[in-house]
Length: 280
Image 1 (cartoon, one colour):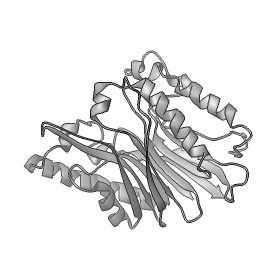
Image 2 (cartoon, helix red, strand yellow):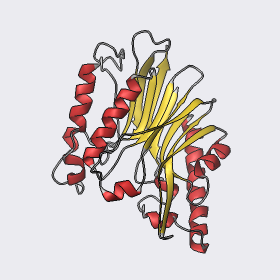
Image 3 (cartoon, helix red, strand yellow):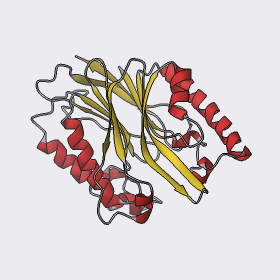
Image 4 (cartoon, helix red, strand yellow):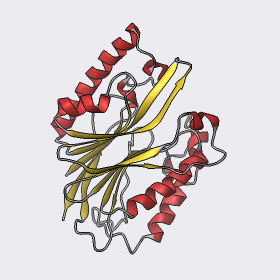
């Protein structure tokens, strides 16, 4: 099985993500919709060339047209979608964007699960609405999760990560595909332009505590490293996109990572992460 995760940034363009670009229908926005369809066709070609079985997408839009359905149809895949934030600011910025999972085979038991929210969450995050993870099951009983954690509220992101990890381990075997918006410790250098957003959180500590907590319950032998689960991300700039595998004793299907790599395609300010997985 080959899986992929990609934050597509609304298929607007490779660098700019101004949400007003996803606003009310106009001639200008019709032009943007046409451009978005061209970007999605490039994603379709990438999926076919890489022979991807399942892809988890974040920030894929319904604002201008139904992007996940359009991509699923042209890629000949099954699709499920879940809104992650939706708001309308005085008809200037209209956003309806979320997570999607596309699969060559049917996805069963679609589920959206709300993340807990801090009482003192920032105003901008409250305007975006409640964040959710999206999950569906393969015919082999593997839970596929697509998630996008909070960007500019690191305390909320910590809360979401703890919830997400617990969800994954309670629904094994599972594969997490997501933009988790935290960086591993070696990348938290002072020169990084958004260091305040990425240096304060304790997500790496939460991840390590989780690994220790479930050391016995999780069975994974990944590339001979005996890791409890494996994370990977974009090494060219910062790692915020991850693929994680979760198994427990007693699972009928076991997951074994063969390899991971960053794909050579530029359709947003993220790059796709691909993992090849053996099912035993």
